[in-house]
Image 1 (cartoon, helix red, strand yellow):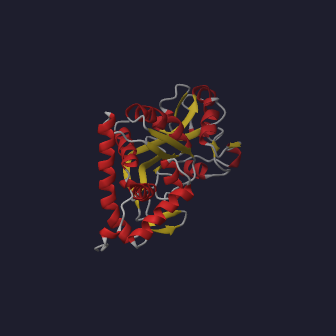
Image 2 (image 1 turned 180 degrees about the vertical axis):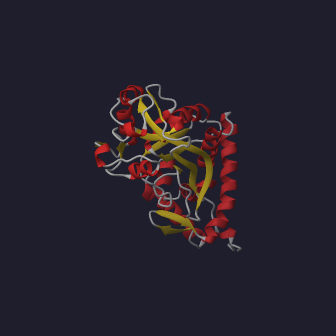
Image 3 (image 1 turned 90 degrees about the vertical axis):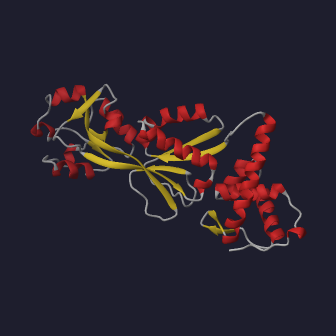
Length: 301
C-alpha cells in the first residue's frame, strides 16, 4: 500500500508526529498522555490535527484502546525512524546512551508476584533505572487487548492471534505442609493419615480434592475446613501448621518451615509458564526490553 501526499502543503510539526508515535506505542490516548506528561484532550487534539493535515485517519477505536489503520501502520515506520533519530540526538547532547524510560505494567498470579518477581524486578531496576514497573498481583486474567496490562505471566498459552507468547519454563507442584504438622500426622504421613488431614483450596470442595482423590486419597468437604481465594493467605496458613496445600517447587522448596508431602513419585501438578504481550506493544522498545529481560531471568531461574 502506498501513501500519496503533497508534502509541500504540509507544515511539519514534530510535536504532532511524536503524539502519534507515543499513542501508537502505548495503544491508547490515556496511556500515551500519562507517558508524555500531558492531558488526554491535549494529546487527542495533536493527533487529530496531524490526521487533518495529512488527510487520512491514523487510528480506529477498538474497545478501550486504539488500532492503527493500514495508512497509520505505513506512516508509523517513518515516524519511528524520526523518533529514534531525535532520541539519539538528545542522548548525544546530554552525554547519555541508549536510555529507556517510562512505565511498564506486569500482571502475574499472587504467588509469582510475591515470591518470584521481586528479585527479578530488583535486578531490572538496577540495569534500567528509567523504567517504572507497576505490578498487578491477581489470580484473575487481565485483558491485554484492552490494555489492562502490558505484559502477563500466565499458566495457559493464549489463543488470540494478536497476542505474542513466549514459553518461559515448566514448573512442577507438590503438596506442602509445615514440618510441625507433618510430625503431628506421622512422618511421613500415610494415605490413611492424609485422609484425616486438613487441606485448603479456593472453594469447598474444589479442584484439589478431585485431584487428590484421583491419586488414591479419599477426601471430602470435611477435609477442607478453611478456604481462601488468596494463595498468599493459603501459604501463610500452611506455614502456621493449619492446613496442607499445593504449590510449585520454586516456592515450596525454598521455605524452611515446610516440606513436601509425598503421595507418589510423580509431581502433583505440571504446567508451563508463558510470557504474553500484545503484538503492537512488542514494537515499544521499553516493553520489549522488559519482555526480553523476564525471558532471560526465568531461563536462569
